[in-house]
Each structure stands twice: as C-alpha cells, then as structure tokens.
Length: 195
Image (cartoon, rainbow, N blue to C red; front, top):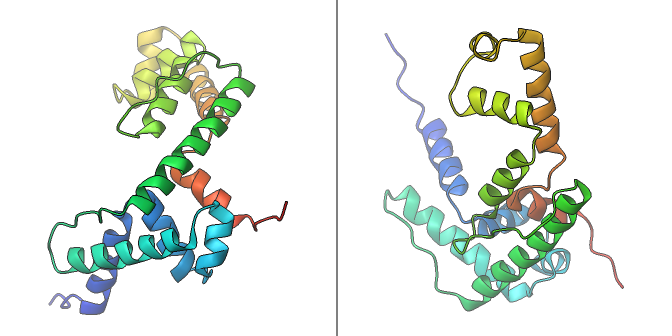
C-alpha cells in the first residue's frame, strides 16, 4: 500500500516552486533576507540600490508567493522603485558583459533585446564565436540532440574528437560573462566597500 503524500513535503515543494517563479531581482532579495539574514540596508549597500526598493521587493515576493500558494497567477506590483532598480542593475550587468566579451575577443555591438532577456542574447553571441567545428559539434549535440556516436558518424571523425570539441564548447561558454541572476548574486554576496 502506497504511503499518503506528506502534506509538509508538498507544501515545501509548492513554496520552492513559487520562489523559483519570482522575478529575478525580487527572488535574489527575498533569498538574501530569508536565507542569508541580511538587513535591508546591507542588501541596498551591496546592490547600490535604495533600502526602500529592497523592502518593496520583499513585499512583492511575499505577496506573489502567497498568491501562488493559493493557486492563483501572480502579477507584479507596479512599483517604480523596483523598475528603476532593475533597469540600473541590467545596465550595470550589460557593462560587465561587454567587458567580459571583449576580454574573450568577442567585439562589436551587442544586440540587446528590449524584453530584457540578456542571457539568451549573450549565449547566442558566445556560441556564434566558437570555432566552426566546435560550433557544429555543439549544435548537433545540444540542438539536434544527437549522441556523440551519431555526431562522429555524421562528421566522419572519432568519438573522442567529438568529446574534445564538446569540452572546448563548454569551456568557451564558461569563460563568458555570468548570467544576470548569477551576476546579481555575486554582487550581493560581496560585502559592500566604502569608497
């Protein structure tokens, strides 16, 4: 006979899913307050934003989580402080990305999207800058979902060469700039310095 699902386990899973669905800045601030026990002022200093924005993000997070746990679809608060902070943080992340890409030899204008999905734009640029055979191997594996054996047969090469090219592709991607959320977490995890 199957055990009945534990309501506490289900509640925790629903809570985690709700936190994962929060907007990036709201989620990062929520986790900094709840898990890292940082004060609003400390988070504000680390992210170079207003403490009231930190409070607004936390209020937004708690409200959205409650709505999601009730089974409804959440909507963002129309808070200009959050919008301004997000815009400034995205601007700073883009400057960081431009520097990192230049350090990798990837130059030229970055086609930033208006919807703010900078992570996808960056990944496309990094992948496009791979050496041609590495790019082709990566494309066949990740997009076409071919196995290493299928790729080696299609490309007329050995499987160890396919593995080597995939490792080069992964290293190439790892040298790129951090995704927005990871960059934001890194910025927030570094203690603020006084200039």
